[in-house]
Amino acid sequence: MKRRILFSLLLVFIMIFGSFVFVFAGGSKETGPITLKLWSMQQSDKRVIDNQNYVINEFEKKYPNIKIKLEVTPYSGYRDKLLVAAKGGNPPDISVVDQIWNPEFAAAGLIIPLDTYLKKSSLKKESFFKGAWNSAVYKNKVWGIPLDVGAWEFLYYNVDLFNKAGVGVPKTWDEWLKVGKKLTRDTNGDGEIDQWGLYLLGAKNEVCVVFTDSLIFSNGGQIVSADGKKGLLDSKEVIEAMKFYRKLMQIAPPGVPNADQTDSSQYFTTGKVAMETIGEWEQDTITNRAPNLNWKIAEIPVPKLGDTFHATFGGWNFVIYEGSKHKDAAWKFIEFASSKDMNLKMASLTPANLDAAHIYLRKFKRQPDIIYHTMENAYARPISPIYPQISEIQQEMVQEILLGTDVEIACKKANEKLNKLLAGK
Image 1 (cartoon, rainbow, N blue to C red):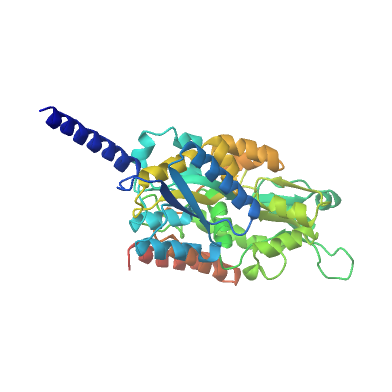
Image 2: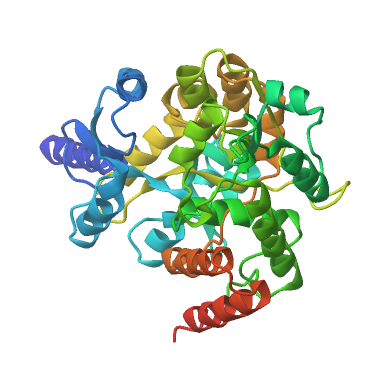
C-alpha cells in the first residue's frame, strides 16, 4: 500500500515537473538549455553587433537556461533569407523585420500575434512612438514590437549659405520655394549655376516614396483608405502635394529622376546645395565628412502655417515565428530587449522606446527636441501585405511626374493601377 502511494506521488511529481519544463520551453519537450535563433540586419557595423551581444549576455545572465544564437545578414538579401527559411519550416525563433514587411509576414502566417503575451506584460504601446507601434498592427492584432525607428525626413541647412543670402529657415511650401530660389545661384560669375537651394530626392526606389509620402501626409492625404480597399493617389491632397514636389525641381540640381540619398550627402557636405532632406542618421555622415561645416536641422516646411509636418516612419520590429518551438522563451527575450536600458543599447537607429529615445537623442544628436517632435507626429506607410507592389506603383508615378507627365494624369493612372492591385486583379 505504501509503495502504491509513493509510486502515485512520484507520478504526480513527474507530471507537474514535466509540464513546467514543457510550458517554459514554449511547447518543446526538451529538458536541457534552450537555444533561440535570433536573426538581425545591422550591416557590418561592429559597434552595433557588439551592443547586441551585450544585451544577449545580460539576458543569458538573467535566464541561464536560455541561450541566444545571433546571426546577422546584410539588408540586400535579408528579406529573401527570412522568407525562404520561414516558408521552408526552418525559421529563426526571433528576428527583426523592416516595418514594411511586418503585415506581409503576418498575412502569410509566418509570424504570430503577440496580443496574448502583451496582456500579461509590462510592455505597453504607450511606451513606444505611436507610428512605430502602428506599423506592427494588422487586422487589429499586434504582430511585432518596435526595436528602433528613423524618420524621413528633416531639413538640413547650411547656416553660412543662408546668412550669405540673407534668408531665414522656411516654414511653408511657398517660403521653401522662395528661399530656395535665392540660394540657387552662379557663385563665380561664369554664367553657370553652381549652387542650388535643395537636393531633391527622386531616384526610383523607396527613398522617393518616403519623401513624397511625407508631403502627402502633411497635406492631409493618404495612400490607401483606412480599410485598405481603396487607392487615394488621385485625391486632391495627393495631387496638390505632387504638384509642389515637381515645383521643387526649380531649385534642385539637374538629374532629379536619378537623385539618391548617397549623392545628397555629397552635394550638401561640399556646399553645392544649401538644403537636403534626409533622416536623423545623416548627422553622423555630415560630422564624418565635413566636421567644420556650419549646419543645423529644422522641420520640413508645411503647406501653410498651422499645419503639422508628418514625416514617414521607418525602422525595425521584433517578431516571433510560427515555426518556433520556443515561443514563450522568445517572448522573454523581446520583453527584456525592449526595456529602456536594453533598447537604448541594442537599437542601431533611434530607440523605439520613448524613454530610451529621450536619452539617446540628447546624448548623440544635435537639436534632439526637433527630432523627437518629428517622430511623435510621423506616420507609418500603408499597413498592407502587398506593400512592395504599392511602393512600386508610387515609384513609377514619381518618375512619370519628374519626366514631364501631367501630375493629375500621372496620379489618376497610378491610382487605377493601385485599385486593381487592392482588388486582387
